[in-house]
Length: 153
Image (cartoon, rainbow, N blue to C red; front, side, top):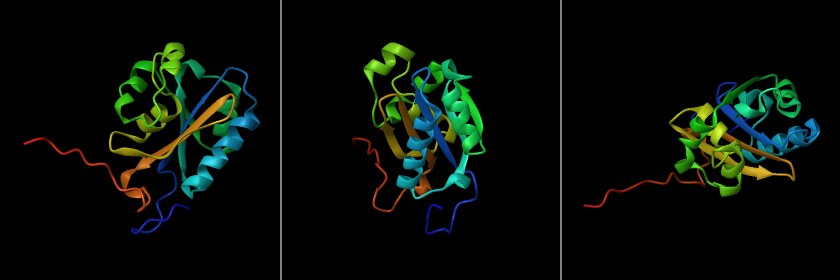
């Protein structure tokens, strides 16, 4: 579980964002997602749903990950993912050229978790897949202070 000064979160507050090439072995995506969960200090029960780009709807690796985590798979169009591009930690021009958005895993995680969410695990990758985890800002580790924007006088 994720630790928080307010006690453990309820099951499912996190969104697992997934991106992968067509035909990526499901085991590769699942292993990468498990690694991200470990980095977040979370477990399977913390995943509310998995999210990805709608062009990956029906992709066996994403569906297998949703099944593995006993979570629904949700898909978003490229324009919706691109709307959160300013919040991405690892935007990619290469990903944009292929998908129309600057980040699939980070973007899907942030969109799925809502406008007040933060990336708890920024994009991690294998040769064929990317994974990120987003959730409520209060779950951000104390060692990662929130970035505050200050308006110029």
